[in-house]
Amino acid sequence: MKKSLILYLLFFGFISFSYSQNSFDVKVSGSGPTIILIPGLASSGEVWDETVLALSKTNECHVLTLPGFADQPATDLSAGFLPKMKTEIASYIKKMNRPVLVIGHSLGGLISLQLANEYPELISKAVIVDSYPFYSAAMNPTATVEMMKPMAKQMTSTLVNSSKEEFNKQQAGSMPIMTATKTRIPQLEDWSVKSDRATIGQAIYELMTTDYRANLSRLKTPILVLGAWYSGKDYGLTSESVRASFGQQYQLAENVQIEMAPTAHHFIMWDNPEWFMTQIQNFVK
Image (cartoon, rainbow, N blue to C red; front, side, top):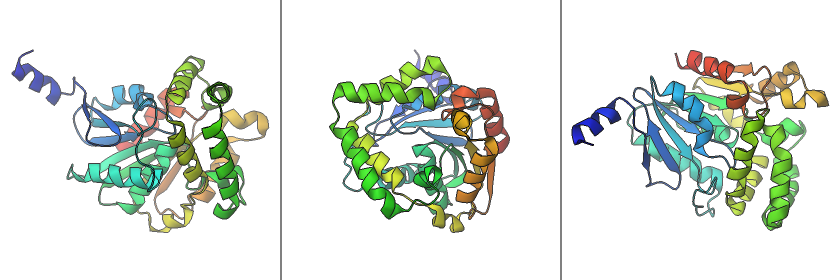
């Protein structure tokens, strides 16, 4: 392919390319204002494929796969997983010399929230997909960090030390709760079993023991929170009750909009794709 043609295709966003100087993988496609997309626990950046297909028509999309997840090489965890990812992604964005929109799912949503709060000069807006400032309080409203530490430690130990067969069985059993789109379940299982067990364990521990709610009193960046409730409908959850839980956790944020997906499980972008894209595009505009 001639050099001039390659440059033309890159400029108009028809070729994606990767960065490799970070502990996380990045694939870039499209042109226009920049959007950073961060997947959740043990997920590949491919979780955003359909989202990027739409957004890259008008935006430059940077899709991350975090270290240790979905066959991505693991990284040093001595400084903690979430703090390291937050700092590295912030450094990556700083090099762009312009504010960006960030979209994060689950664990990626918490990272996105922290970026928007602690680096307001870098983040113009943030979309938080089914993620809370304090995950444990979504399960138990009376939870505290100290209360959750022993449980988180035990869960991490069990996960890391279980046999391959036990781990695979546990993942297969949990995935139907994650998405109502059955054709996606094998993909989720594949990403999970190809992830580094120690990284998953550390990330889960930090998710369970990070209470970021009080920090939101400083948050000025516009935030869109997209919540899911449908997988819990057989256990008494309703759209209204889960919305109230999100509202309680995000109450200190100055500029937050909360929308509940109609029938999605945790992977809203797969289960209610049209609704999801409408929310994203309206917020971007």
